[in-house]
Amino acid sequence: MTAMTSTSPQTPPAAASLHTPVIGWFEQHARDLPWRRPEAGAWGVMVSEFMLQQTPVSRVLPVYEQWLARWPRPADLAAEAPGEAVRAWGRLRYGVHRVPQHRQQPPAHEGPPRKGQTYAGTDRQVRGRLLAVLRDAVNPVPQAALDAVWEEPVQRARALDGLVADGLVEPLADGRYRLPLT
Image (cartoon, rainbow, N blue to C red; front, side, top):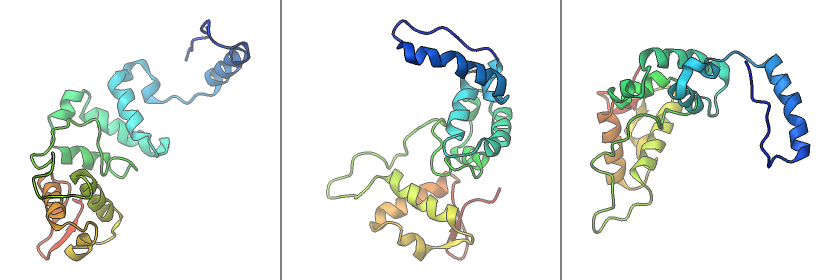
């Protein structure tokens, strides 16, 4: 790997004296990671940035490779349902409740509250809390446990219905819920 060794005119002399040793160390010790390669492109680098948030490189590598094999371009990902992206994300720390690079089309129920409604949070917050409870559960979660997540019943029900419609949550016949099995 080669790195730039020039400094800008505004770089203080003390900082400039660090550039050469740091760049030398990097050239000698840098790991060969797929998002550092020229063929990764902007899409591969962006995907790696999202995946590497709070997740060790060793866990990201296999998911990153599978992700780019399935969706080599942003348009390929945008053509899929949001639930597919979340399932492919797997158990990476981020992404169970947020897949930022997927196309964002706000659901019809989001927007300003209707007259007479006062919500303590947004539908996105409710969805995030519901998904967090389901993600951390070992067994399917009963409706009563999900009811305790958010006090406002209409907003909670709307958020849960949206998660089911998006394929992010699977309702069971006995009134319990779980994340879809992959």
